[in-house]
Image: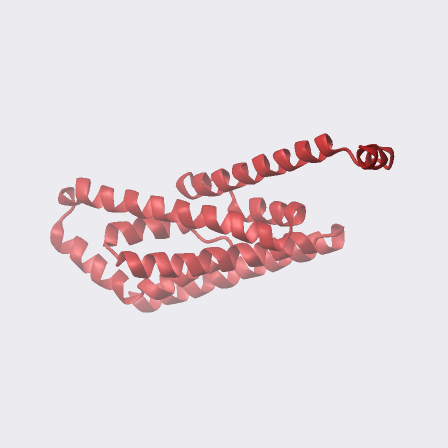
Length: 193
C-alpha cells in the first residue's frame, strides 16, 4: 500500500499510464487500417502517413504496423484484380489481352520491385498483378519484401525529422527518388515498345 502512494507522490499514476497505452494501441490500429485503405483508395498518400508515423512511433513500430497494412491492402487489391479479370475478362479482346499479358510478364519482377520506391502506384501494380494472374506466391513474397522495405525507409525519414532543415532534406530525397523512379520506368517502357 505504501509503495502505491509513494509512486503517486512521485507523479506515477497507473490509470493514466493505462489510458495512454490504450490510446497508442488505438492509434496503431487506425494506422494499420489507413494503410490497408490507402492501397484500395488511390488518392491517400502512403508516404506522408508513414513519415508522420515514423516521427511519432519510431522506425521499428511504424515499419511493422504500416508495412503489414501495406501488405494486407496489396493482397486485397490483388484479389480484387483477379475478381475483375474473372468477371470482366471476357469483355476484352482475347488476342490483344494475351499480347499485353505476355509483354507484362517479361517485366513482372522489376515491376513488383518498383513498389519499394516512394511515390509508386502500389495499388495499380497490385491490380495489374491480379488481372495478369501473376503467381500468388511470387506476388506475396515480393510484395512483403517491398512493403516492409519501403515503410522502413519512410519511417526512418520520419524519425530523422527534427526541424525545418531535416524536413526539407527528406522532401528533397523523396522528390529525387520519385524522379529517378519515373525515369527508370519511362526508360523501361520505351525499350519495351
